[in-house]
Picture 1: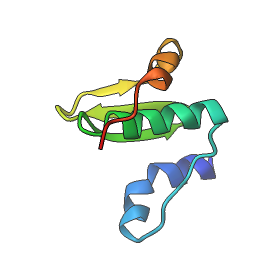
Picture 2: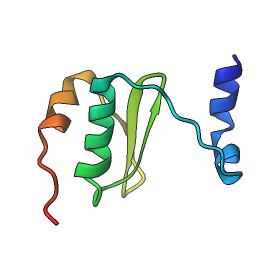
Picture 3: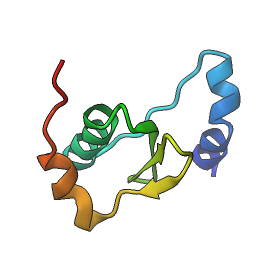
Picture 4: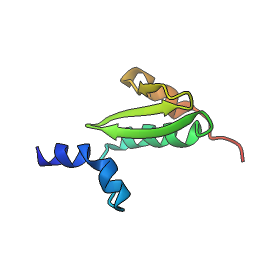
Length: 81
């Protein structure tokens, strides 16, 4: 219960310089980073709650990354610099 209460208050804590970090599996972390970095021009933010990755598009539409889509995200090419 304490963990969930802290996570619910993460925006308030962030404003005070305290950041929460969820311990992800290697696979979930890989997908999280793929969403965050490979589509940085189309995705506004990425987060994880209870092991589930979600992201918000530039149009403010929120999506949950489903298990069936993991390979798609992992297969995306890194953007050219």
